[in-house]
Length: 258
Image (cartoon, rainbow, N blue to C red; front, top):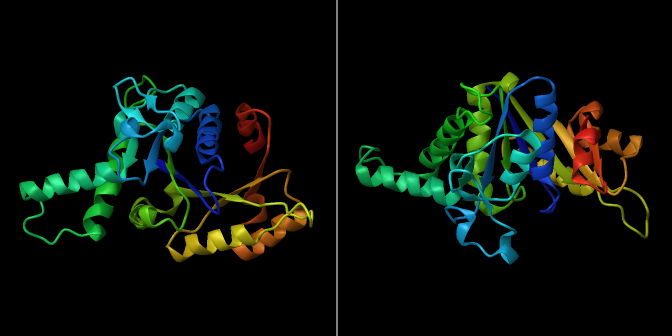
């Protein structure tokens, strides 16, 4: 099993879900079987009780799971049927760990974020990745994982730590990190600014994760000199920096990535 992790920086709402879905669609078009997992760092066990004004529409899965709308994107883009196990929340992780502690599964150990919460996250990812979602038997070839929220959020820290450990657990050849970031254009100056992405990548590296690919959101395609600057300061090869500029329809995103 190979894993692609999609994270986001600078601001929320950059389109990580559509980016993750599009990456999955490209991998599927190469003949690979793809599954996906959405990680939501909020404490709710699922999206069922959350106001649409607060969180957006709830997507209901075939098994009755009430989940984030991004899972609806995964199902549409990849033509798969996901389960409630494919949506991980902080609430689900802590509930599972506390249930185990009450049953004595930790044999009297002091239960802590590291290693118990982080181990639970890694085990959940491995378990969910093995669930067949495309109507065929056996596990998929690739699992695309989207980490909700923005790098630096306090609630996503246990997941960042767990995914850093997970990247070593599965080996570098089996783990790819795509970081979606913002390259704003200041209307007065009219040039693309790389500093927000530099800070975001620095924060990510400081937490133990190094991006392999930068997916830069901007109003227009990145200039070559901007790519070179990002490559130099973020330690990502220029050919691994892609621009996801504004398009009129989300179905154009896979074409941009291709």
